[in-house]
Amino acid sequence: MASALRLAARRSFAPRHAFTRSIQTTADSASLTSQVPSDASQPFTVSLHEDSFKSYRCDTPSLDVEVTKEQLIDMYKQMTTMRRMEMAADALYKAKLIRGFCHLAIGQEAVSVGMESAITPEDKVITAYRCHPFAVLRGGTVKGVIAELLGRQAGMSKGKGGSMHIFTPSFFGGNGIVGAQVPVGAGIAFAQKYLDKKTATFALYGDGASNQGQVFEAFNMAKLWDLPCVFVCENNKYGMGTSAQRSSANTEYFKRGDLIPGIQVNGMDIIASHQAVKYARKWAIENNGPLLLEFVTYRYGGHSMSDPGTTYRTREEIQRMRSTQDPIKGLQTYIEEWGVASEADLKAIDKQVKAEVDAAVEEAKASPEPEAKDLWTDIYYPGTGPASMRGREREEVHHY
Image (cartoon, rainbow, N blue to C red; front, top):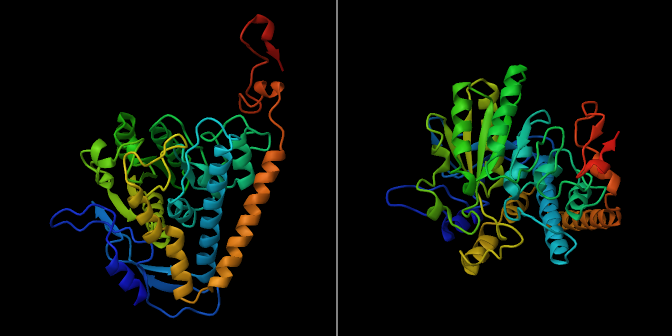
C-alpha cells in the first residue's frame, strides 16, 4: 500500500506525450506477491510495475521476478559502495589530488549493479568514460580505482591510465573517444561467436553518443552476423551540457537499431535493471542476434567534474530526482517494507562501507607515483614486445 501511495504521488521524470504511456522511473514501484521466507537463500516473488519495460520487435521481460534476501542485501551493499567510491573521487578531485578528466556515475548505480547481478564472470563488458563502478564490479577494487584516479602505482592500470582507461580480464575498459567502444564491443562479440562461447558482450554508451555514425555501423554488422552483443544505452537524459531532446530527433533509443529488437527499462529500479539484463543475456546466448537495451536513468552531477550540471537543467529538477527516485533509497524501501532487513541493519552496512572506502582512499593516497622507467612498460602484451622502443630522439631509445 505504501509503495502504491508513493507511486500515485509521483510522476515519472520521462516526458509524457499525448496517448503514449512512458516508461516510469520510480525506484520502488515493485510489489511483493509471495511470502518472504526466513531462509535468506530461498527465492520469493515480486511484481514490477507494468510500465517498467517497453519493447520493440520483441516481447518484454516478465514483470514477475524471483529474488532472495541475500541478493537484495548484496545489491544494497554494492550500490552503496559504488556511490561512496564516487563521492570519494569527487572530494579528491575538488582537493586537486585528482587531475584531468573524471566522470562520475552518482545516481546511476542501479544500472551497473543490476547488470553485474544478472551476468556471469565470463561475459564481457565495455563502456565509455563513466566506468568506475563497472571496473570494481568486474573484478577490480575500490583501492585500485581510486589509486588509478590519483595516478599511483597501486592503480588498476598502474597509475598510467587514469579515469577512462581501467581494465580487468572481462572488462574492456572505459573509453575516451565518444562512441568508439561500441564497434569494439561488436568485435568482442564476434570473437565470442567465432570461438563458440556461450557468453554475451554488453557494449554501453550514453544518449550523447547515440548519434555517432560508428554506433550505427556497429549495429549493422552485429545484425548481419547475428552477434551475441547487447548494445546498452545509458540514457541519463543529458549529454555534455545538452538535453536528449535537443540532440536527438528520436529519444526512444531502444528503437534506433532498425531491425534490431530493443527494450526500454526503468534504470532507477535495481530489480527492473536486473530483470532486463537477465532477459538480454538469455536472448544473446540463444543465438537470437543483437539486442538494444535502453536504461532510463539520471546522473546527479555534471557530465564531468568540470561541468556544474546546473546550466542546462534546474537545481529543483536534480533535487526532485534525488529525493523521490533515488535507486539506493528505492532498494532500501523494498528491503525494509518486505522485512528483508531492518533500518538498523542497513545503517550498519552503510557504516561498514564508509569505513572500507575511507581505508581504500588512504591506502591509494599512500601508494607512490609511477617512476620514469614505467614509461617503457605495459606498452605491448607480455611476450609480444620488440627488443627496443624508440624515444623522442635517438639517444632515448630504450632497450629491453
